[in-house]
Image (cartoon, helix red, strand yellow):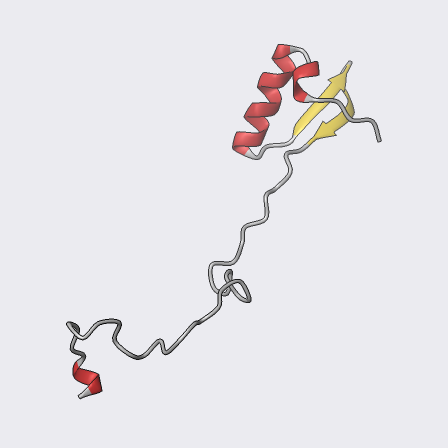
Length: 77
């Protein structure tokens, strides 16, 4: 597969590709009314909010104990 950078394309095509990326619409290139190529933006995968930090943090110490003597939790009484 041949790859080129966006900066190597003519400015008008760069504008069309940027528009397709923003709107999510497919860009069809035609010649004499016949489709030659289709360019579609790559859909970025969204990370799940729930469980996104799984196995990336470490709990150190007692997370239920108040961090200061100045703090009084009613649940601890």
